[in-house]
Image 1 (cartoon, helix red, strand yellow):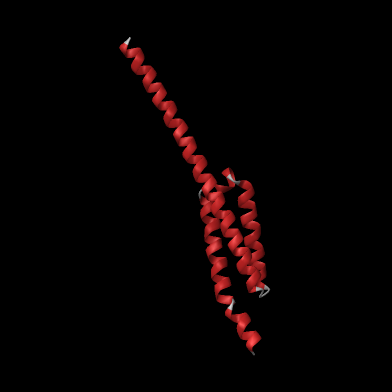
Image 2: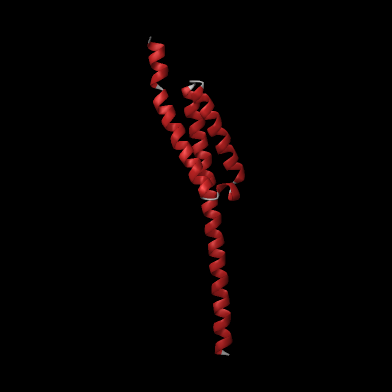
Length: 109
């Protein structure tokens, strides 16, 4: 009886871990993680799929572990995507400033 209770008591946290990880993977995908961090996104999706399988197999401890790993990979992918986009924006801004400086110099001369 205790074994059944102990096992089922892990179901809710594991289910929550998988749900939170799915949201993290979705957020990373929405932030263009697949474009800027394809390896991390692939790992996140694979681990999430394995976590869902473990959940279906009632291996709640493994499901939680895989879900947490998927969430970490997704957050890394999102961070890399955000960083790459910020760098691109900074580069574009620097280019615009350079063009404006050149135009200002041309007007002054």
